[in-house]
Image (cartoon, rainbow, N blue to C red; front, side):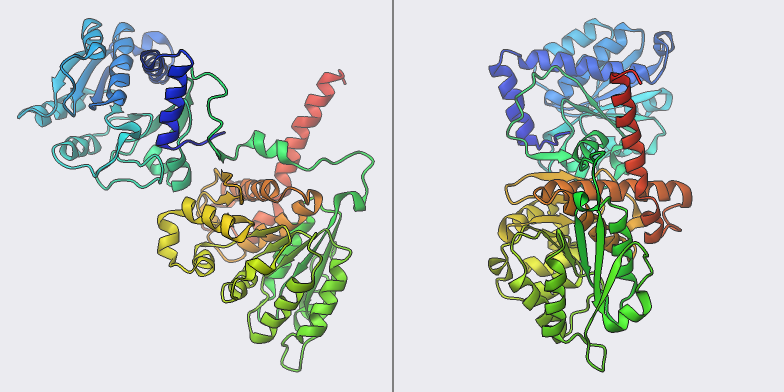
Length: 528
């Protein structure tokens, strides 16, 4: 599902006009779709009759769409009052048509406007926010802020037309004086900002309404929300004649005397990815305690000195040997970042077969962030999986700067490092070097705990072993499956009580749910 910015939506609308679909037609379609969505909330058409609906109308096209919606609702028997929240042009055909249909129009900017709005809200059954939509370019100030605050004080259900007033369509930033919605009715396309904000309390339930935009006008849009259907289509095939070799192998390098759990969780997740074989290379001290914890994996100890620190050359030689029979290489979970480990990583990355895809996570990223121009010496297809702090270190900026514009940062990192970059967090972002971007639909604070990133890294390594030529696609799939499993854990255990290991145990649910669907569909085609 493509995600558009304000400028991209404007370009699509202009393309519609060029293709013969007028702006007026788009407005009429939008207003009708909004009215139908509001009416659907009341079930039977007769249940809408007599309902009191208020519409906050802005100065632009969003306000015109609101008038069209109000006209239809009035024609269907609702008692509609449109409250002007900004000056409109003296020639206003949509307002005139709404008045003819029985819509009452009042000026919310008049001396008595605020009091009148409060009276309307006292008996209103629903309110449509048609003030700004994607048109927000400046902070919300008086007198609009008082009108918005009056609505927030009421308990009236709010339908946002396209976007809640105050929500930036590109960045997801929400004005402190903005108007959160219970339902957001996006027009034509979902917008990028809400998808990346990771805050459903602003938009409420989201619906995307068809407003008659012809197909094929969105080729300039490179951002997508990962949906179930998209993820299912990305799943590696599993031919009936397949064997262990068919589904690849992944080598996970991590763990140290102080960090035992990370590599275990990454390994466990990898074995649930569908990969044929999972190898683990970990330091001798860690090996003694964790070898065999995941019985499906094959472990090898890496030599260390008497203090439990990797001996760089010998350990690297062992990993490079194992990598020759591996389809992918995951490095970082629990690895540590002492000087010997830094040297070890440098040797491995400089000598590993450049055809082997890499997943670099956790301590591997921390080590690279202090290495001068490391990306110029790395030719492997690579996926980086930083959280915001690690991303800041990699890019030489603060964590706050990362969080202020995650889209620009993750795209800039993917282009700079010539790698697929997974910027973890609420609504995780995945960027490819060519500018493609996918956004995870999952928002779950249960993942904000130690171990979640290790699970994702292992899962990604296993998926990439099955489709080594598709790092961006497998990264997008891994993020979705990880979130799907976490959502299942959230439903059963709650966000507070769930753990990373609970997510691992539910990684198979996506495969089960969607393979069953595909099998049923295939059987239906051959009548089995």
